[in-house]
Structure formats: C-alpha cells, structure tokens
Amino acid sequence: MEVYDALARARGRGDRVVLVTVLTVEGDASSHPGAKLVVGAGGVLAGTLGCSEFDSAGTDLAVEALDQEAPIRRRLDFPGHGRTRAIELFAEVNEPEPAVLVLGANPVGRAVADLARAIGRRVVLVAPGGDTAVRSGVEVRADDPPRYLLAAPPGPHDAVVISDHDATWVDEVLRVALASDAFFVGMLGSRRHAPEAVRRLRDGGVPEAHIA
Image (cartoon, rainbow, N blue to C red; front, side, top):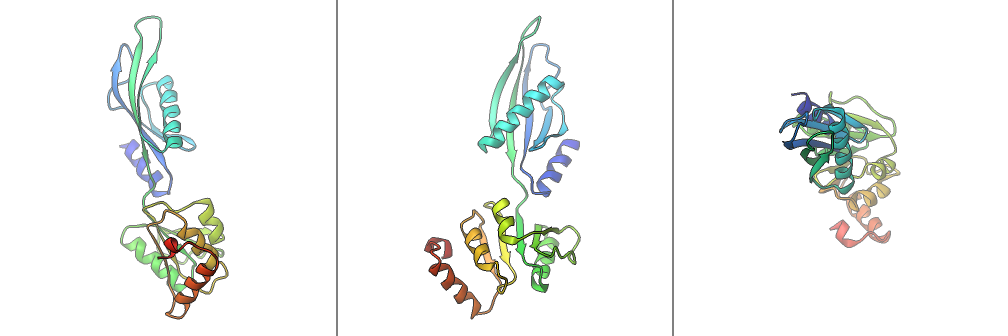
C-alpha cells in the first residue's frame, strides 16, 4: 500500500513520522474506519482521511503527537447544516529505523559501514570529505562529525562507531556521543590509544557513568 510504503521510506531516511488512522465514523462523514494518513515534519506524505477537512485535522493531530512524542487518541466533531459529523483518530509516532552512525571515512570506517549495511542496518557515514566509496544504500554525509551529532542526536536504538582515533574531532565526538541516548558508543583503536582516550575524557570532566 502507498501509505505503508511512504512510512517505510520516511523511516529509512531517518525521519520521524506519524501514522494517523480513523477508528470510528459518526454521521454523514466522508471517511471510513481504517483510513490512514502519513504525516512528516514537512506535511502529508501519503494517504487521506476522506476529505481535505479531515486531512487538515489529522495533520494538526500528527504535529501535536510529534511535539509530545506520544500517541494521541481523540474524537473530533465537525458541525454542519444537518447531523453533526464526527471521527475518532489515533495518531502514532513512528521513529526512524535504528542506525549505525560511522564517524570517519578511512578504510576501517568504510568497511564497518559496508558490513552494517550488508546485515540490513540503516547506515550513515559521516566524514568531512564525504567519501562515497561505500556499498549502495549507505547514507554519506559530508559534515563535521561533532556538528552532525549535535544537529541529529543519536536515538536509543542507534549505535555510534568512531573509526579514526587520530582525528582532531575524536574527543569532542566522544563527549557528545556518550551524553546522547545511543545504546552503543565505540571507538576503533589500539590498546594504547583507548586508555589515553578514556583518560582525556575523565580529565575533561565527563561523568564516570558516561564512560563506564
């Protein structure tokens, strides 16, 4: 179905979207139970609730659900010349697909990105140079890694992998990533570099709970 395809595409792009579904219909309402609308930050992506009036109401409810980061169930009345029309809507927020964020596009970083993509994970490779020598389907972002993480913080189902322990941005990225909701933060490095990185984090005041 178009609605579910649009939902999957949006989540695959890393977007948060809302699926609005009609639960009940009362009166002479031009809709039916099960009608669906997919709404993203930029507006309607697919589907309809039956008419522009209902679509507008569904979009407003979706925006509210995105702001609250929680599902909403609500009955809406639409007075007319005859019997009052009413629909009950359910707006459910759909989070982006879990991602592996690979920071640094050296050969190790590209290999990690390719492997993660090969096993079906959404992968974002972030590097100042925007290296594109990776498997098809890997999102490549030519950006400063610390700035990217601050602009698009990892979620609780995302993993962060730092592939270049010599990069000038490593310490800043570690501080940002460790303070995020990411379920995993790792850096590829030798037995010598890893303890040094941990020491710098402690010296910089990073809470022990973020390092352990």
